[in-house]
Length: 488
Image 1: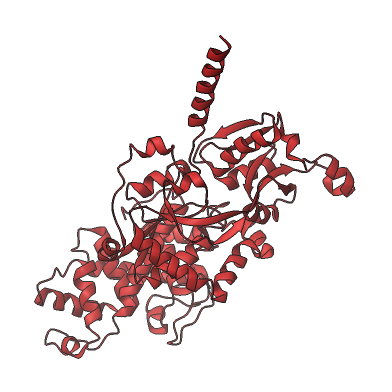
Image 2: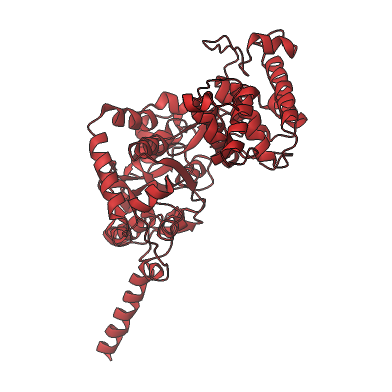
């Protein structure tokens, strides 16, 4: 009977062990992985596509919007990686972090650029790149409410400094995170039960940190570098209690992408010899003053819902021409970076960078006045829209309008005539008229009989349209928009 009871106990322990075999920041376990059909896409296929698709998350260090500019540690590194590989970059957000490894395996992205802790279990599921940095996990807890009036030793008495004190305490983490697995291991190490409360995969580590600061929960676990930078603007937090040894933080690719892995590792090796690599890290994890300034700003997408100080004016004017205001905001950022006093070498001024003659034509008296500049610029956009009113597709019309705003409608019309002559669609931009606006810098094209206005440095309008639309799609990801009219 005694042996039979031991046998039953061993089976129960084995089942518990299987149930705890959770992936960190990825859905399910190895058993679930067997149900996922991993695609086989490597660097050659990615090069054919011309685009590297990275999976990431919104956070105050990885990927965010600040004063209209896309920023983030992973984002800046990814831009350099894509440039090194001669690929365009597309970032797809995993809104539920529990699904990010599944997304990778099923081909929704090529690389997980959200920093993952390298664990033995994860290494069976994905191929890790060389690590970017090392960190350790810490307990995020709240200081006493009146901590500013207390002596340090009295504050210390009310904080957990020994992980043994976590026995019986509630700690909130995502179930499929490395923090959850660490707490399970910690229970074994301290010989007691921690009340591990799991949250949904769409809860980010930073959200949980903020919940601790706000008193909604008492404890969570985070990587030290993330916890420390968040504590700079949430000073009520204490993040000094370590709960793990140093761990490596890295990106990951599919096991079926060895060529991509080699290319990324080669790039990381070269980047680590360049000072800019460490400048980027320090920018997001060490520069506490800049982080605090961003975190307290209403133009920081993690905390606020504004793009610029001129959002209200932009909304009103965009509505008058049926545009999504975030598209107009993207255009204004392209023109002036939201600097109302911007001036170009050619003499264009203000938010909308209008040339003096055009400004006068549309009644702009003070080019440095934001409201006047936007109003006049939108009046010019409306005039350009009339030139392309035969276009039924609003997206196509907008691209032609933007290109005309940048380089002038005459050069765009030249490119339309070239496109038609050489068998392309004169009413489509990408791959058609855009191709010939680029070719207008070559003599055999700008001297063509159908061209009336000669040479054009076509890379400027080409990139202008491309970058505005890329930024517009980023703005749509970060900022919700009431009353959008245009289906763009």
